[in-house]
Length: 390
Image (cartoon, rainbow, N blue to C red):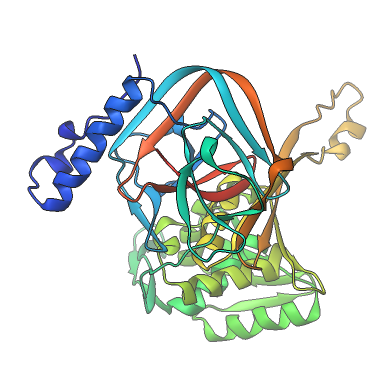
């Protein structure tokens, strides 16, 4: 039996009597009925969906997940009207190019426009004649405007008998976002028993000057060394250490919900740290953190651009000093993925034609969900776009 999400069991909807609720309920009812009667449309198991919790595979979605939906050109996070999965043994469409990667059933609707038209359409892929179609990949976003950021208070022991409470630190949000970008790209924390410090590495002149100008505006004392900057502040250290090591870093959800102007501040400082801008203006960003990679893809979408992710496996450095001292030491090579996120600015549209379309037989599980606007944001093998859901 397919696993179906029944909207009638969802407490969020059970008490509502609005016209919108009635329409959405019947949409979900007929979607469930069609799914059960083999009028199936769906995605393969390697397709991810953008949610408030980041990119998730369909199999990892649950009732609490709010998924990214396109409503009149704006990104909105909404609860699915239903979730479904089913075994599939039959024809499937593969759309694969430098910027597109979709594996979908014949009945699934694409959200596209023809090259000479200005408006988008939702039609099943099996009914479309592929002559230079554009798949939408950008959106508008209305986020929160927050003026101040608060670093929580902590208790600090002056000695064995006296403990004081350090008050909250109030920082302008714009300053904090710029600092957070530098820290996530080039920063680290080092802790001791009773203290700790933050280090931001940057040797190059212009970039180093920008970091110094920012630190002068913030309420922390710092020292400048040849390799970068060091901030000795226990309260800041206690707050930042939760971000972990380089492969564990991430952008908090409340930060990702900010408006476009503030998200661009964070984005620009991230790129200044671990990014690259080519002479022609193409932007790339590099990270070893899977979570930061997903968070940055979401930020890029919200500021009006389109991300594409490339993954490679790299060997992690081995402690050769220990191996040389110990003849019996066994050197274990370990590997970890690293990610390159390319930012697409021009037109924010993906172009596909007949040569990018293939038909194939597929035997496996397919997944789908239903949202009121019928458009969701998906990613497969690092390539993102908006697509119909049913």
